[in-house]
Length: 445
Image 1 (tube, helix red, strand yellow):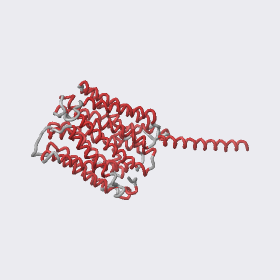
Image 2: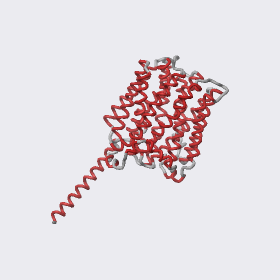
Image 3: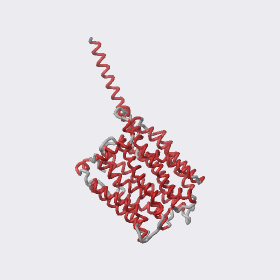
Image 4: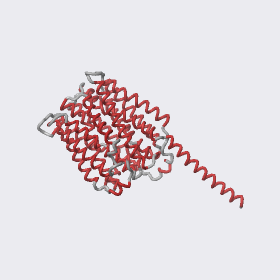
C-alpha cells in the first residue's frame, strides 16, 4: 500500500513537471515569434498590397481599353473583379479565423500568403498578355490572400500582453502608410514621362518578387503562436463557420456590437475612397500616377506627424480621438466630392483629412481586441469589411455611367463620396453610445 502511494505521488510529480515543461515550451515558442518579426511579415504583405493599390485600376484600364484613363467598360470590369474578390473574402474570412484556432495561425497564414503570391503572378500575366480572364483569376485569389492583413494582428494578440497590442497595431498602421507613400512615389516618378517613363509591366514584377521573399521567410521562421489550439476546438459548431450568424453580434448592440457597426461605416467610406480616388482624379483632372502618389504621400506625412507627436490616446481618451478622427473623415469625403466644382487642389485637402481620420480604425480594432476571442471576431470583422466593399462596389457597377460624367455645376459625379461621409456621420453618432468607462479601462495606445 505504501509503495502504491509513493508511486502515485511520483506519477503526480511527473505530470506536474511535464505540464511545466509544456508551459515553458509554449513560452519559448512565443518568444521566437517576436513582435518585430510578425511586424515585418505584415509590412511585407502591405508593401505588395501598396503596389496593387497604386497601379491596380490603371492595370485594369490598360487591359480592357489599352489606356490608363477609365471608361465605362473598364469601370465595369474593375467592379466585377472587385465583386469576385470581396465575395470570396466574405465567405472565407470567418472560416479562416476559426481554422486558425483549430489548425494554428502559422498554417493559415502560409496558405493565405501563398494564394496572395499566386494572385500577384496572375495579375502580372494579365497585364503582360492583356487578358482580363487572368485578372478575374487574380481577383478570386485576392479574396483569400487579403486575409493576411489581419492574421498577423491575431498572432500579435497571442504573443503580446494586452497593454502592448494597440501599440504594435499602430506601428503596422504607420509603417503601412509610410511604405505606401514610398512605393507609390517611386512608381509615380519611374512611370512618369518626364522622369523614368518605365512601363507598368515592370512595376507589376516587383510585388511578385517581394511576396516570394516574404513567403520563404515565413516558411522558414514563422512559429505557431497558438500551441494550445487543440483545447479550443471542442466548442465550435458548423454555425461558427458561416458568416451570416455573425449578425447577432451587431443586433445585440452591446460594446462589441457598437464597435462592429462603427467599423462597418469606416469600411464603407474607405472602400469608396480606395476604389475611385485614382479614377476620379484621373477622369476629372487627367492626373498622372505621380500626382495621385503625391496625394498619398501627403497623407503619409500627416500620419507621421500625428502619431509621434502623441496626438492619440496617450493624451486624450479613446472616445475623443475616434470621434475627432471620424469628423476629419467626413471633411475628407466632402472635399474630394466637391473638388470638380471648385479646384483639383481641394483633393489635397481631402488627403490630409483622410490621413488624420485613419487612426480611428486602428483604435477601434484595438478596442475590439480587448474584448477577447480575437481570431473569431477579426475573422467576422474582415467578413464585415468584405460586405461593405461588396455594397459599395455594386453601387459603382450600376452607377458607372454617372461616374463618367464631368460637371462643374453638379455634385452628382461625386455622390458616392457624399454617401460615404453620411455613413461616417452615422458611425460617429453610434460611437457616442460606446460606454466611456469601458473605453477608458481598455487598452491604451
